Length: 340
Image (cartoon, rainbow, N blue to C red; front, side):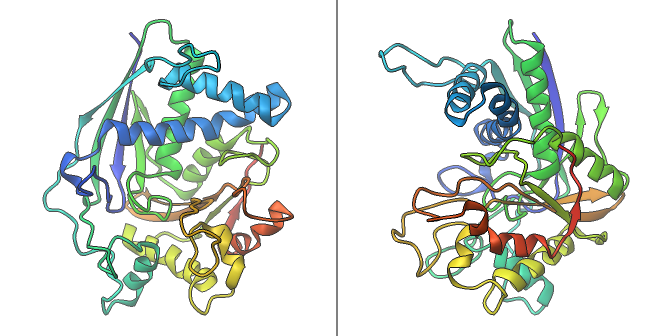
């Protein structure tokens, strides 16, 4: 039976949990599997779109391949079982320590101005209105995920999972507000191969490695495409929280109260948006993936922008023009060239 073992380090506090919204269970296999499926879809869309030639056929094939690899309970139109058990068994071999818990950050009311900027990205994590303080897993801890593949799983499928494991630890995170840089995780090792970055250049090269081939046209869901952008803050910070604050400060200058992006131009950052949604239950996640990454004892802030068809109700017109406000934010960062 083929196996893969991936070691990650928690870089910013992780607000993860089950129904009680507490980190009592640590990193749960279903949570990790959800992130793995997301990045697998995002990475494999360009290949399928190229091979199939149109969105509809590529979506059908993506759904079929995902169901075969990750499992599905769906049935086909004729009522027969179309899914089945996952080919991948996931277990968390090593958990991070849950004590002491993180219950003070982010805090928008602190006297330290920089930290209050992180609070702007963490709405829902601290007491505000009906929201209670979320408890999280503290940073700078390892966890290890072990994956076992059923017999008959192709080497191509195994490699596609390996790529997704790397993407999680280069661009992603786990838990609430992970697209805003909370719960960032850094890949340290996949089996015997080290992925620890010793320089900004090495981190950027790993990003290019993951993003290569993302030349698909504008996609119907969040995936690699030829309009993606990768940006970094071109300096290293003494702590992960300082790096996160720096990202938040740039975001606030664009989207915050008094920022350069106003009104309906904020829609592209994610829904719901107060006073502008036709239905307050309409939801759409942000196309931005903020991430904090350790580099030789210091920390780098990055952001991956993956535009896609936003929502059936929005926009009414030019899809790319709709993302103008998000592009303004990306312009606040140093652009990293990504060859497709």
